[in-house]
Length: 225
Image 1 (tube, one colour):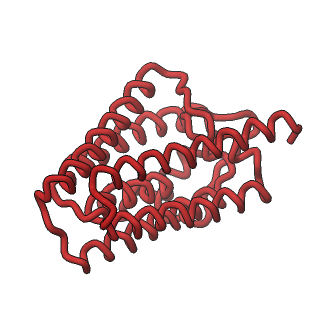
Image 2: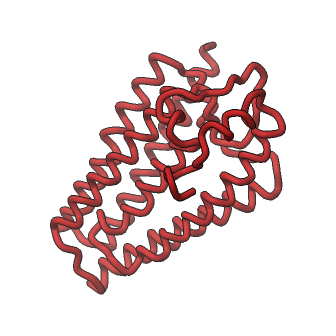
């Protein structure tokens, strides 16, 4: 990777850290300093993030560069991404309001279980990334892309999305709030629409994907969907 591309990638990574840090600061500001749930959860986010970024900076910086691209080519996909962002912003606003007004109380065991569930989701995302170097953030089939059917892809077709959903659904409970859960649950529909659109592209453009779908029947949850 050239020096210019490397610098651009580092700036993109710093922006990613900055966005997460800004979100954390906003939640802590509204929730107050005595917020152990937030401290644990953002540690669950930051520590694996540092590990994953360090790993791929050494092993496959081109993969990270692909993951930093956000602009979808298709209008439908841009709309799905926009709806997903709305769900996230609405969910974070609800979390901050729930904490500020003390609408709900989540038991310690449920908070810690949600942290563990979120960390497991992060681990699944990492395994998917490590197995599939073509896992771009946008829906596309790149030149030379090959079908991946090993690792978690041998069990389900979209392990990255499953891991992302695990992290998203666990977020409100991990942050000690109950009422925002239905908002974040809407993200299941967002992922469902995105998977259907992605599979349409893969079936049309990626060699062997139709046969892979015949072999691996389920998209997210074995025995369900």
